[in-house]
Structures are given as C-alpha cells and as structure tokens.
Amino acid sequence: MENFVVSARKYRPSDFKSVVGQKHITTTLKNAIKNSHLAQAFLFCGPRGVGKTTCARILAKTINCENLKEEGEACNQCDSCLAFNSNSSFNVHELDAASNNSVDDIRSLVDQVRYPPQKGKYKIYIIDEVHMLSNQAFNAFLKTLEEPPKYAIFILATTEKHKIIPTILSRCQIFDFNRIQIKDIADHLAYIARTEEIDYEEEALRLIATKADGALRDALSIFDLIVTFSAGKKVTYQETISNLHILDYDYYFKVTEALLDESISSALLVFDEILKKGFDGHNFLVGLSEHFRELLVCKDPDMATLLQVSETARSRYVEQAGKASVSFLLSSLNICNQADLSYKSSKNQRLHVELVLMKLAKLPHALSLAAVAGNGAKKKA
Ligand SMILES: Nc1ncnc2c1ncn2[C@@H]1O[C@H](COP(=O)(O)OP(=O)(O)OP(=O)(O)O)[C@@H](O)[C@H]1O
Ligand SMILES: [Mg+2]
Ligand SMILES: [Zn+2]
Image (tube, rainbow, N blue to C red; front, side, top):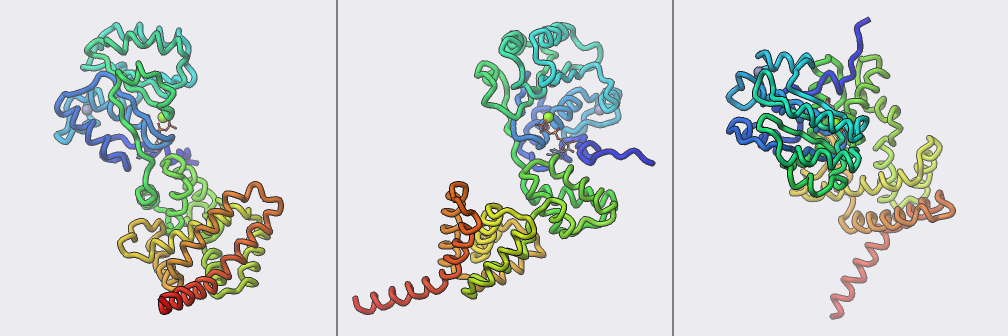
C-alpha cells in the first residue's frame, strides 16, 4: 500500500505564490529579497496553522537561492534550493523553542552563529514557537539579536506575540499573519480535491472551511478525515455534517419558516427533533442567530459580499429573506442574543430555548400591531 501523507504536509507551499491568503506578507518579502533590503530579524506572528513556519522556510530558501527568479521566487533547481528541499542544507537551522527552551540550547545556537556560512550568502536561524523560550534564554539571545553578523538572519515565529518581551519586539521586523478567509480556504480545498481526483460538493468544503475558523492546517486535517471516511470517493455535505456533528442548515430554514407562519407548535416540534438527534440547545441558538444574520445580509444587495454561504445555498437564503422583514430579523437577533447570554445561568435550558421560539413566533404579529399603532398615531398628529 502506498504510504499516506497527510494533506497538510503534502501540500505545504514551496514558494511564495502558493501561500494562500497572506499576500501582504509574501509581496513584502519578495520585494525585500529582490531589492536586497533584508532585515536581520523577522518576527512572524498570528494564529496557528496559517503559514508562519511555511513562510519562514520559503524565505530561508529564497534568500540563499543562487539564481533567483525575476519575480523574487526561489528557482528550486540550484544546489542551495535542492539541499534545502531535501532537508540537508547547512545554512538553515531550525530550533523548535517548544522543546528546546533552555539557556544551553540558545547558547549552542549563539555559538554556531559565530561561524560564517561555507557556501552561500546567509545562515538562517528559524526559531519556532519563540514565546516558549525561558526568560534566561531570551536574555542570552538578546545580544546576538542586537548585533548579529552580516551573514546571519533570524526568523522568529510565534502564536503569542504578547508574550514576547519588548526588547525583542523592537529588534525585529514584525509580520502579522491573517486568519484565512473562508472562501480562500474553500478554494484551496477544491484545488487539492481536484488534484487528488476526489469529487466534492461545494457546500461540504465551505462547511469544513467555516469549521476550521481561519486555520488552513485544521481545514486540511478535517478534509483528510472526511475523505478517509468516504473511502476517497466523494466529499458530500451530508457526510460532512454527520462527521463533524454539525446541524444541517435545513433545520434553520424549517424553524424560521414556522416562526414566520407564527406556528409555535411546528417550531417546537422541529426543536424537539434537533434535541433528539443529540444536538445541544445552546449551539442551536447560536446557529439560529447566524441564520438570521445571513438572511439580514441577503436583504441588501450591497451587503451580499458579507454572505458566508456557498453559491448553491445562496438562492435559498435570498428566497427566505424575501419573506422576512428587516424588523423581524433585527428583533429576532436581539432576542437570540439575550438568550445566548443568559443560557448558561438558566436552570431549565430546554425551556429557555423553547421560550425564545415562542417569543419569536409571536414577533410577526407584534410587529404588525406596532406598525398599525404607529400609523394611527401619525394620523392623529
Ligand atoms: N497560508 C497558507 N497557504 C497554504 N497552505 C497553508 C497556509 N497556512 C497553512 N497551510 C497548510 O498548513 C500546514 C501548516 O502550516 P504552518 O506550519 O506554516 O502553520 P503555522 O502558522 O506555523 O502554525 P503553528 O502556529 O501551529 O506552528 C502547511 O503544511 C500547509 O499545508
Ligand atoms: Mg509553526
Ligand atoms: Zn535556487
């Protein structure tokens, strides 16, 4: 059997242009390399799984490339690039500060820095998870960071910028990595699925991207899981929701329909079905608020870009949005929000959500009464 390589490793970008969603960083880095305007110390910070280590490695490879391409990318063919790609480069040193955080670890690194590279222009030190260094280690490192030899470049990476002492911060060029947009993650997954010849439903990828919360690595792991589950055939929406234990958005449409019809009984019955499937009332409440948000966004063509659902689902949202008034959606969001805040302290949580549904089901009626009263008052005045 062929060895299975997880997608997160198999699809680690090897040049700047294949890094997803961090253009502000890759462009700056490419320009710096092209114009030989390199800082001696970089700090890459941002949430986990968004490309910090990846970019650090690409940068390390690119600055030592012997025939840099015109657009500022490494050639992947010269000796230096080949050595780097096979992990045998003497010019790139990686230290994982999560497991090597003692003063001695840093001292041995500082010792190495004294020797210039035998081949190539730069020696690059990547210190990953740099916030894990002990205070003493930080201090031992400071001197080197302040006056590094010309050939040394440091790339520090961390998820916790606030834990880095100001003396280090002020010596580094800081790059803040973004969480990656849902659309960008979904597109990247689609690209991988096509390359691996796996069929997919757009909505399934969208869901995985949403669940990953901006971290591409998480998205890739979830994707692998679902591909394995479906025996590599097709990534479908149904399989994805059952695997991730996510409530089908169909239920939100059903509940909203019941509410707009002012039918308390059908809303409560749908909620009962949801609970029977093992879903949690609080999650339902949060999901319902998100559903109202999507509907509200559909109301105004100018806001359509804020819609976070897939193309296929869009028409369904637009259709339901047509039936709900803005005041209904706003008041509903308000009620859900209040209930969300008080959920944890409520003694009977099922009743808590049911009460919300009852209030919401009475909303259309209450709003129309208010409108009538408002008109009456205007006439009198
Ligand atoms: N911006 C991105 N573009 C393309 N792939 C990415 C990106 N970010 C992450 N990945 C994928 O996720 C994997 C892990 O990324 P990486 O190690 O660079 O994350 P990180 O930001 O260093 O995370 P951590 O903080 O957990 O160390 C990569 O191998 C790659 O497959
Ligand atoms: Mg990392
Ligand atoms: Zn090269």
